[in-house]
Length: 140
Image 1 (tube, rainbow, N blue to C red):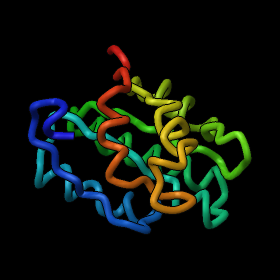
Image 2 (cartoon, rainbow, N blue to C red):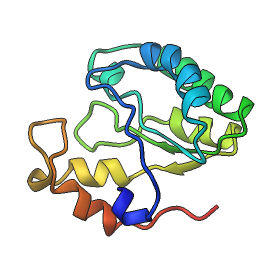
Image 3 (tube, one colour):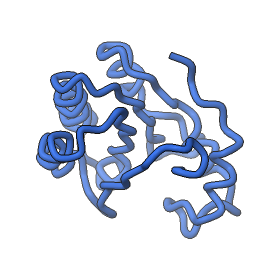
Image 4 (tube, rainbow, N blue to C red):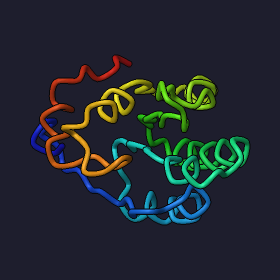
């Protein structure tokens, strides 16, 4: 991703993390890193484990509020629900609108629908980088 945008990119994600854990970690990360942009991709592990949608939404909302309190803009990436058509969970649109954040609603759905880009049923492989470089970023 750093090569694509010409910016320093810090991946502070933790494999298997759920939004409750991310919610606890984010304030310290924002304070330490003081980023120009937060790319927030959380909720997939919650959805896979059957965490209630409202709980996921509440955790994401707090993360968006934490970023707003530090004047850090957010690019929220929607995670598909557990269903055949891989439609994004509707609360991502709601949260992005409420917090005036950019939203990438279908990029993850598109990537996950291509078997060549996945290392297993739910995880992307290294080939995803070239696919992401062909995606249009939303305009502010």
